[in-house]
Length: 287
Image (cartoon, rainbow, N blue to C red):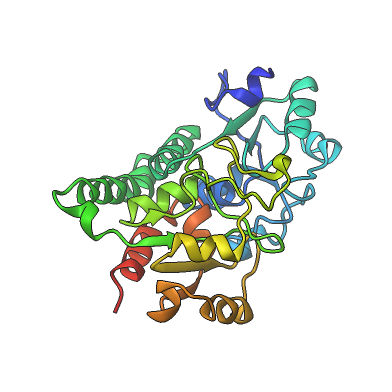
């Protein structure tokens, strides 16, 4: 196994980092929020926030197909990547070229908040850490305390949050989205392996190791979610998708609790964690 791909820790750096290429949209936004934007010399096509600050920066391709030649040409002292967003092939090629690569892999909201705090170590002013990272860590701690409160389990709504359709796919327990659902007070209905389906080929059966298992609409009716969140990324769910699910025999459909949401709330680490916790918890509480 590649050490750089497997390790979530920042590489040892002998001096302050002045040239950074970010291959992760949420990390790019985090760097600018922490006042480190002037050190960013290259980003991906999917890095869109903060919009104005990124307009003049070189682009190095997509998150899945970043161009190692374009990255190397920018002479970065550090490349920021992520196992969820990027590909092992690109990371290992950058490592083979002698570039320092930090591969993050938060699978919980707390780990996402801690990544934001760790990015501050790249040279953020203490005031920026306190203003940007600290409130996020505090918001996570507050949500964790609420979740641990006596009697909380009895009132937790069941949530379905797909990431794709044709086929429909949704997060298992080994994902950041799952933890966001749970931390906001919900229960991820695809957080456990689905029962074997005799109509499927055995090779298509969902196992405990699948991070985003496929699910049929018949199976979704069996899972009976109370709330459905339809994010606008990575798949941009539309009103037609909400209407389709609204026609199923589901508690969420009968109660009118199928919501199209900002996809960054369930997938971006960094400053967006705090508003995501507030907004998603509000949706779970209902009207």
